[in-house]
Length: 272
Ligand code: SF4
Ligand code: SF4
Ligand code: FES
Image 1 (cartoon, rainbow, N blue to C red):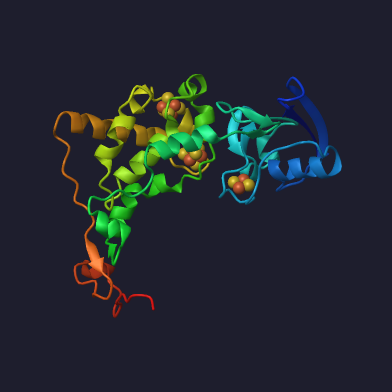
Image 2: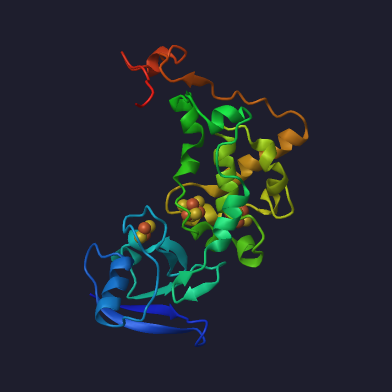
């Protein structure tokens, strides 16, 4: 089957944007990323985009395919059921060239919400000699939100991010909740001023397009609603005190872990 690929082209230093059209014989199982590689190898070596893993893990190949922000390596050409496929760069980000965007804004907002474990017992955090205990149920609490690969598809789909680059956006807000829901973290108050700022979570109007396009099933729209609830409960003074993860010294037996999670004869020892 022959499919026409209409690809957005732009080189900010040289020209106005335009579309290039390429016709390609496609086969069952061919992804949009493979089609782009074939176009580059056989038809037009000047086409640019980003890719790395080819397996939906690195997040590099996010682009807008037939109007939907998607991973090119996870999108099968034949499943699009169209003899014309339009490929464009992610919205909400400046274009560097063709399909490659400048994602600095994603990482700026991601960094601003302190996406790491914050503890009050600083000594244990900086010079650890123990591990923080976490049960499978406690892991389950935030696991869905830890699957984010920072591809930017949700930000491209978000109408607020498209019109306001200072809005923290679905990726960063969801990341904040991922840590707030982690029983090893005690950083809710450290993140509060940015999350509850004019460009924080209350700017989201819950259109849910971020969750609709997320290729990893993370559901950032749900995370943002949970985040709003946490902030409202805190403001009303009725947020429950979080039970933080206990530490377990290296070399000690996991005596405080419930029986069902214990390995039979397992003890931790310091690496030599
Ligand atoms: S939440 Fe989903 S769409 Fe957004 S950056 Fe993470 S993986 Fe990509
Ligand atoms: S739910 Fe919020 S973050 Fe997601 S697309 Fe809508 S406005 Fe943007
Ligand atoms: S190339 Fe890594 S997610 Fe597509």
